[in-house]
Image 1 (cartoon, rainbow, N blue to C red):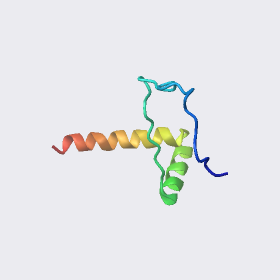
Image 2 (cartoon, one colour; image 1 turned 120 degrees about the vertical axis):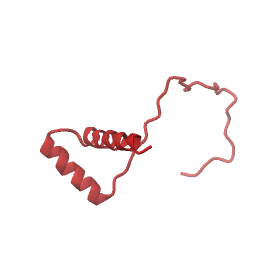
Image 3 (cartoon, rainbow, N blue to C red; image 1 turned 180 degrees about the vertical axis):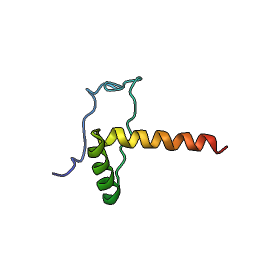
Image 4 (cartoon, rainbow, N blue to C red; image 1 turned 60 degrees about the vertical axis):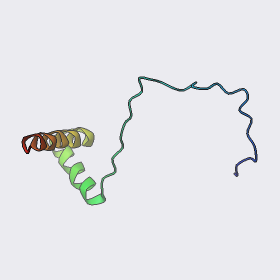
Length: 68
């Protein structure tokens, strides 16, 4: 399917889907070896991978705070 030469936006409504309270969610793609490790570790601990990754990153952030 190709794009049309022209589109008619005369009936469009500006800002129809704008939400000032929307929160951006950043997707992170792990390399296969890291994903495999994190998946196994999460299974061993009985938690979701997202929870495990977030906790590990929070702990890493704390170490950055002490380096000042």
